[in-house]
Image (cartoon, rainbow, N blue to C red; front, side, top):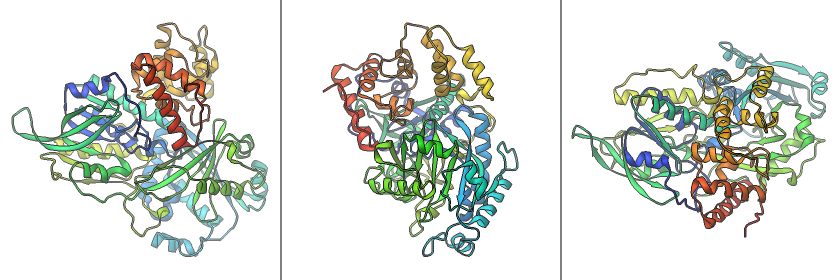
Length: 596
């Protein structure tokens, strides 16, 4: 759940197999509500332990906060000044793990911090540390503080580290490496973290790992998107005739059909919507206090060149930690951190765009930017704990699990609510949450996920030459290196499965893009729970993110998907209109369709 654009959409005329699997056997040991990365990670882990687990997601997988992140897998160097040492240590360990077990999506990210002073902030830093508040006008973090922080960061990374230690540069060498940086800098510090360029596809990989584990084991693992929890029913009888678990009412968001589903343990991983989900289950909670973070994506060759392949990570004049970094041939700029109003859409505002332009000028003063260079905007609500008077930037990024016990109308079900959670630590968080569920069920852990490759990360080439060899080995008549490279980037080594599907029938590239073919769209529809055209544009590919959606593309994708998804002409037109609405309303993109 936790989605911004799941209302007012057209409906599908064909009942999906993912929903059918839940309706045919409407019971599981565990029901997970919420298909962001933390819910999906827990689904995978439980399935690997042989638990009968089901997951439902109100919108599409990775549609909420998980799909609106800064695309970073990082140890959280700035969390050090909040005193969150446990979180930093866990984060750097998990960052290093993901570089190994998900190398198809998680890549090393060279990061540079421009520094404008030497000792600034030394006196105010302890006060920030103790109070978690900014006292008065922000004091810039100078070289001394940043050096101290990076040294601690290196220390936390010492075990199992796969990235180099940090380096400091004086002004002259820093400008030699990044000549368009502000000439007033005194130093530049460079260290390595990691990025995830395809968070939506990584989430799908984790989900499919769980489904396959369930299919191969004695139990089952089933998941469906566009399936929401409506309300909680009463206690349910189990196979022995005694009361066990509880029944919830689920609604298919594509057809409107409603049915009951029963589980012994319910896991609420709906992010910033945790309290609202608990309310739907008849319980009052006030765990959450999310903050909104917005980003813009720029098609700006000058800014791309200025970054020189690095993320620029720095403190803006208001004390907010912000970032600029290249993703392919685009540049991502973010992020804000303001208290979220859950009654309003999470969208990037004009004021936030002005803020982003200002921060770009702070470090690259001779690189002009304009609104017509923005190809995509996005925003999400971080699933942070309630923080009352604490300023958003100082709210803990750590997570905790609240045991709700028996809800007012939950009968015998135990409800566990996840408060917090971030991308980098999703595997460790899922392990923690899974252990808690296993304890409730009286079961023991069978398998560790710490070294288990995720999806298309299994057997992924670990060198540039290895990638070239893989591409050459999979080229065939009609497919050039660019097409194979695109498939490897999108699916990892699971591209072999996709290629087998493409080869099983006549295929052609779309007229509107060389990045998709007819049979690949059919593969997505049949194997990746596509519910809408917009799912393909935003979460099965990065076409929208890069500003490559055209009216021709919208029409062509809708036409191809209509066959496997059972859309008639009216449904196709509705899908095109819905995609246009989502792109404009939530992402600042206007696309004019060829269909009236």
